[in-house]
Image 1 (spheres, rainbow, N blue to C red):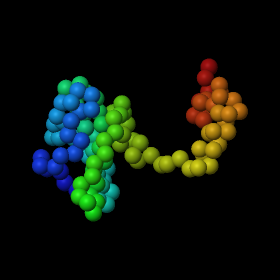
Image 2 (cartoon, one colour):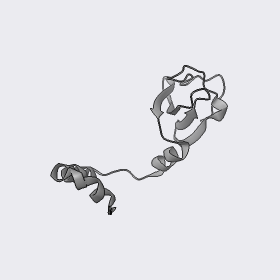
Image 3 (cartoon, rainbow, N blue to C red):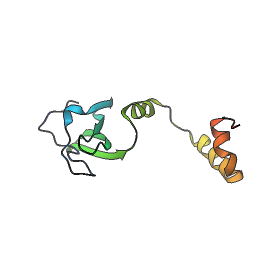
Image 4 (tube, rainbow, N blue to C red):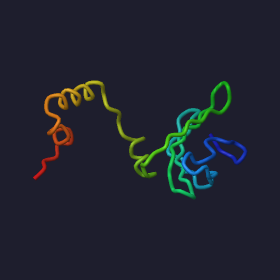
Amino acid sequence: MEFDNNQHFVSRCPFCSAEYDLDGAKVIGEEDDSTMVYVTCSECESSIIAIVAMSGLGIVSLGLVTDMSENDTKRFVKAKGISSDELLQMYELMQKNSSQAVESLTKTKHK
């Protein structure tokens, strides 16, 4: 999917209403008829992740405000998902002992 200046998706910053400079948009990932784009506002430096997809009705876009950097976003897109068993294990661990849950989940020992 290619973008041109005639396509308007999430065109203004939700914080300062400045118009995005789409020349600075970074493509994070593409799949079938959708593209994930990382855009930073040149005025207030807030960032969004926009998902732009082609559907039977035309182009659909959804923007999500984020505090992640472009590199963080790329890393999370490539990361494997969490299984339902892992989620249940984390929930049970936090219910049992919330003070040690983070240490147990990350397997990091604090001195």
